[in-house]
Length: 270
Image: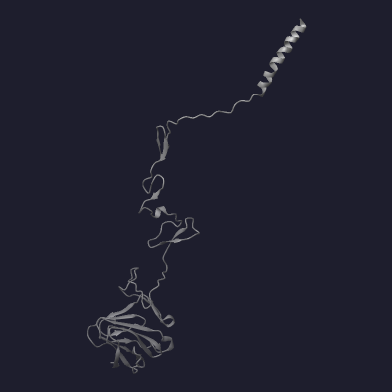
């Protein structure tokens, strides 16, 4: 009986052992993937969603200062001071923007302290006293004739009177008299020494041929535009409406310019 049971046990081991080994060596299959259909999406702030078989999301179009939903565009006529990154705060009227790499935004407000202007040869810039540059008026002439031979800036009209005129040296003098025969007198001492070289006088008259330019120093001599030298004490007859003279050496006044008609020898001063 015992032998029979032993034979049955051995037989069972023989039959079941291969299955037990097979089970111990079996591995689980990989996770499977599947397919499906998304039936809807939900848009957040600034997004629009569409449903159906192919739902999608799109960005709402921007409005106001910036427009567009994909490529954005800043609208015209909208950028102002508030949009700029400027450290220096509010500007004063007349200030302008200057590039400055030391500033966080790369810009700063700056006041206009000077202005360099290049003019064509032979032209002069005249200011009108209101921050503009034109030939409407003449006020404050800067002269550097001795070193550069040029006049620049604004011309100062010092004298504006009828009758005989006492000339102001290094200034524009305007005579309004309409009666022939008045003198415009250059004060004594304006062209007596080497230190006076470069002094200048401009005389403008309301009408042509109204004034004679004279010197209170009888030893002063005028030299005409054609380089004719007058006799000491002779006056300069302003036949046109303007004449300019300069002290080119002690006692010598040279005609540098005129308008309408060249000045001539007026004979001995009155």
